[in-house]
Length: 182
Figure 1: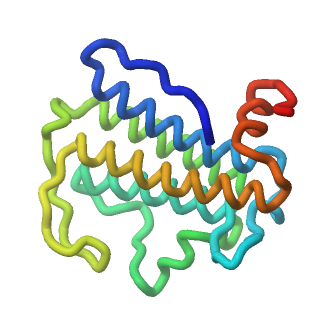
Figure 2 (figure 1 turned 30 degrees about the vertical axis):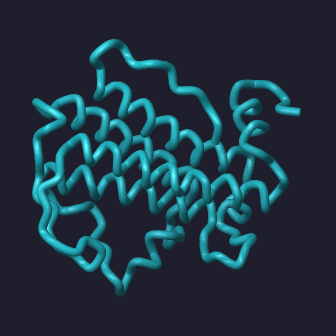
């Protein structure tokens, strides 16, 4: 969803990268404004994507990447057998609880990225079904990847939200800021 990220403080590359990640997270959160659980979980197109599912997915993906960068396993193990569950709420999961989880993940990302000695520091990303080979990735690459991944899904969220009730990105930003958006 369209917002403005101000310029970083001179030399604050981490701050700039984190600001762009936060901007895209905001787009996904805004897409859920004013929706019921049923609306948030509905799939208004030929795609299997829902806003609730996108929210859960981006929270899991971000947490998983940060965990790997720390040398830890992701909180949720996903493979071909359960990948579909990363795109829908299951059990007692709700939009509210998933939003809260996303906030925790965001705080963890911010803390971790601010704590690494250098954005040039690397971590090993092992070969997986979706990663073709063992690779050493930098913290800078990780931040850029999170921006790309989140932005991609924020774009999906824009389309899904507009399909649900006609609300556009500009209207949702205005609503969040207290205006009518019309």
